Image (cartoon, rainbow, N blue to C red; front, side):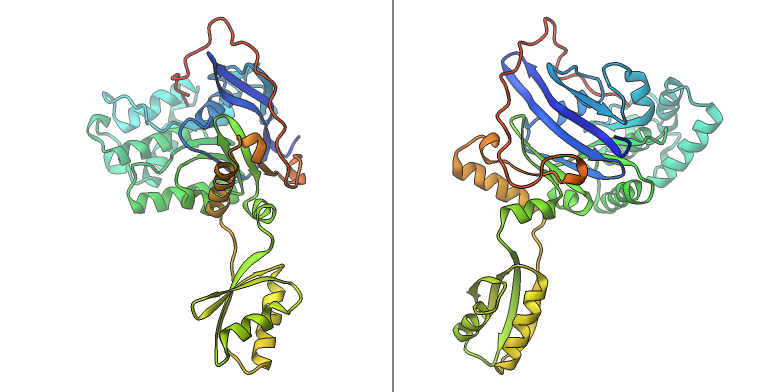
Amino acid sequence: MADVAISTDGLTRVFGTQVALSALSIEVPRGEVLALLGPNGAGKTTTVRLLNAVLAPDAGSMRVLGIDPLVDPDELRRHTGVLTEHAGLDDRLTATENLLAVARIRGMDTAVARRRIGELLERFGMSARADQRVAGASTGQRKRIALARSLLHDPEVLFLDEPTSGLDPAAIRDVVAMIDSLAAEQGRTVILCTHFLGEADELADRMAMLHHGHLEAFGRPAELAAQLWNGIPATLEVGGIDLPAAADLVLSIRGVLDVTLDGASLALSIVDREVLARAVSELVRAGADVFAARPETHTLSDVYFEVERRRADDGTTAMGSAVNAGAADAGTASGMRPISPAPPPPPPPPAPRSPETQAQP
């Protein structure tokens, strides 16, 4: 477990009669970015609140850096940082004062905290507003201050809920680069809740798709794509040869699974990239001109929408149409298989905490 940052086993949370999260079981290695995806109401925020001890589960267990959030929440928060979708800053205070207040709560040395605050505000382009009241700040400026707050104590695990919403393109670029640096260069683990699939595609090592509290898919996007599609796509732009004849020639090559005409190009499905090289050689040998040969990859976005499409087409719940290529290296089952239906959740506790409770850094 030393290399596992987050693990959950059968994690379940119920609000009244509504199942917000059903039997979630995942493992996230240290130093990776996990994109937690799904529509509104999928269970993403509930998952983050559970992992930060803001909510207690109705069933199952969880560990963050080996810590049980319910047993030692204070120790947990020494090692984790949280950015909620809404900044939650005190408008009466300046940016520096907002961060100093959190530093005091965390027991940080004042001199160390001031130095760290200055570095972070400069990093996010907020030095000029360091001593101005937050009341006059824009949405993007407030988000930058909140990001600085979540990083103030240099956490090992960072929970980011829509970290780039409200930011301008330049700020989005900076935040994406920062997240990538935290994981790739500094070994931090990042849980990224976002609706921006392109952003997730650029950053995520793994993805977890939730729908109405059920895990639909979990794993590396490439592994999930291999389970969803038979072969990888490729394109050949050719000339100097009858296109249907070129298609027949290419289809006869070992490792070519399918060929279709796409305008003046051939759209292929192949078992691996080496097959494309053989296709080019055969076409050239037949006298064709090959203007381009492009192997392609299925993106995280492709995987997301394909899983959603199959669920919608099958008319089933996530449990009946799930893909789980969670990879053996993360300790989860690999291969395409339905997730076992979750057991009926136990009745909620006598006085459950409100789902509107906000996670605080």
